[in-house]
Image (cartoon, rainbow, N blue to C red; front, side):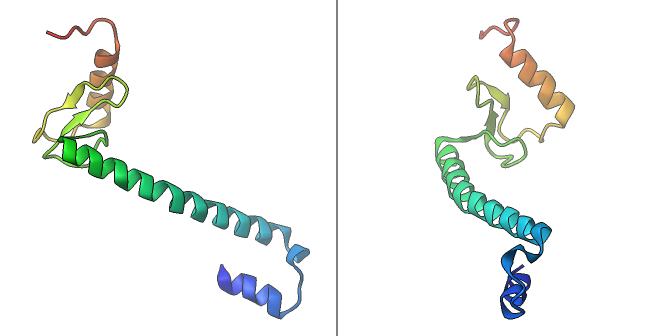
Length: 103
């Protein structure tokens, strides 16, 4: 990406000589900015959850209980095998429905 940008400068092609290339470069810059912003937030969230003894990530840490971020209820107990997508969806729908009652 940088070499393409540098090549445009060296050849004096002008930035608008290739609108599709400029769009690609703009998309790469936006993605980079999002990554630089989101990664530290996600890492901090992960560390906080680990200290509190749970995770909200579906396939992250088997040694921690997986908690539904919307309800705060346990989806998967600690050390239970990771859930496949179908099982996780069934459990989440039960947790979030009115048929589930804490006992």
